[in-house]
Amino acid sequence: MDCGDAGVFVMEIVVMGAGAIGGYFGARLAAAGHAVTLVARGAHLAALQENGLILHSPKGDLHLPDIRAVGDISQAAPADIVLFMVKNYDVEAAARAILPTLRPDTMVVTCQNGVSAPERLAKIIGQRHVVPGVARFPGDISAPGVIRHTAPFDKFSFGESSGGQSPRCDAFAAALSGAGCMVEQPENIHHDLWAKYVMQASFASITALTRLDIGPLRSCTDTVSLFHDALAETEAVGRAVMPDLPEGLSDIAWGILENRLPDHTHASMLDDLLRGKPIENAWLSGDVARLGAAHGVPTPIHSAFARALAPFEAGRVV
Image (cartoon, rainbow, N blue to C red):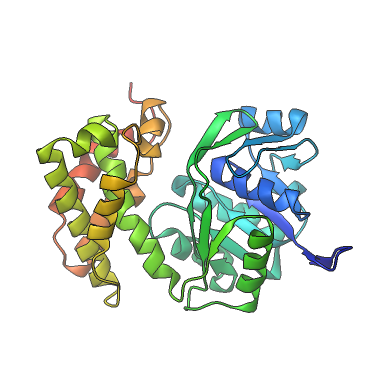
């Protein structure tokens, strides 16, 4: 970290997996003056290198023509912070790839669906580097090199795995706040991981299996009942894993699904499935079933979801 002209600490930040979420936070941090390197691939990388990053957002549009984008993290400088934004099925390979980028004090902030990524990452890079995080960001890549942010909401919460916050978390929070992003620093980040997971596992599986948006699903009494049962099942598993988990997470999740999502909303896993891309089933309903079995909690609903979606895990079925 260097001190900039205005006395603000400039961080060296690498975004490992600069898709919609990683690209968005990377863009905001770069615009605030931090040294950001985006690691991307394919047509998105080519567009970033040729035209820079374009962001359309209700919080303010950006065009960063000179943002640094690379296809190989070996081209990035050692980092103060790595925003670890890859899909679950790339966690282990990406964890090995970032090893040369880590200084002894580098923090690696996770941002995967589900609850298992921080532990899987720590096995490869060491627990001291890992800071679990949760991003809540509505948006997508509308075209290569172009990120579309669809609502004025961009919350990033994170905290130390052992609980609480730390000077390094505070420094990152200050950087995000200075970039105009919403920040939350919970006392127990694992509670926040589970709060999102309770909703995401059911939302992803049900929309993927039915190929429907939330609108028709919440207009049908049978699928409403299925949602309630699936949410409660995941919360029961969470409480077995973490007995101090706050009560009522399934009710909170249903409140979001029922009242806060537009009718056309569906989980990104449905988009991936329809495009023939790999899906994160193993770490959504699959992990509900796995953790339930490990802790003696029956999971008939998510076990069925996981089995039904298993043929699509590797991508297009032919």
